[in-house]
Length: 297
Image (cartoon, rainbow, N blue to C red; front, side, top):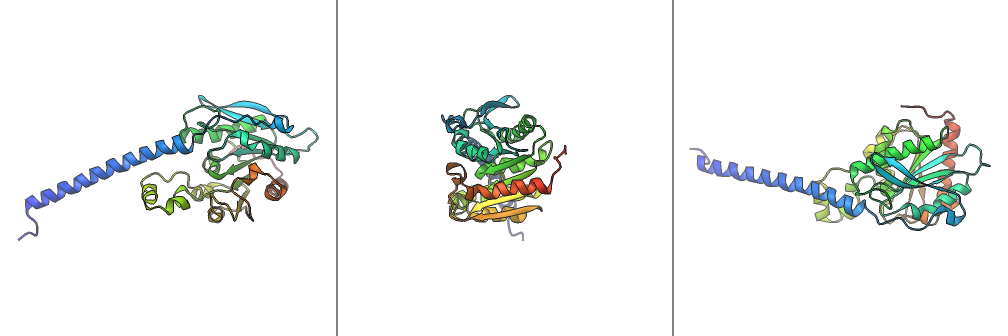
């Protein structure tokens, strides 16, 4: 005699189908909702502030970088003519920041004979809207291409801060030519590994119903240029374990610098020789170790 009658089996089968359909609806809806909220809340900022490098006595150009049909607001600071073969640093800033907040950092770099480009991606500052993951990925490549064209023959380095590391790392394999080096500053290993997410059961469950957006630990495996990972052991936003995990996953050549006692945003709010020193040393060392200019991929 069967354990379940045909009627019971039919009821069970229908119940299972219902559960599967509901799961698909919830899962799909969760992905769409999470993507929408991430773009509108995390990747969208207000307008750019009034601060410019000129207010600190640094000459600059304000340029709209083309990215498909969009335009990206940017500040460009060119090293003084007295500098010999100055490197160029393209900066991918973090979430809820605009280029106006980075003018102190650009002055610091200018004072140390480093040219710099910083831009607001789609949805940020005065750049085109609305924010979208796909757009920001395209912006990351467009900004690099623009910088290469703006500074022909120069050595281009890229630096990411906080969430800005994610699109930078994801985009690097798609750059038309490799950068001279890459600096990963104050980064998380992945959004799912974030402490604020893992400490809350609901957030942790939601994290596994959405795509594994911007997993820096995986993305860095595809980076084959000199790499500097720099992180403070007192970073209150992205714990230092994230930087260590990214460094461990990265191929050689790579360098890890753990700073002591700095907050998450020190590099642009209060730039100093102590914080930026390893970056300047890295740029010089990378230039000496790899004197040839990078060619097309």
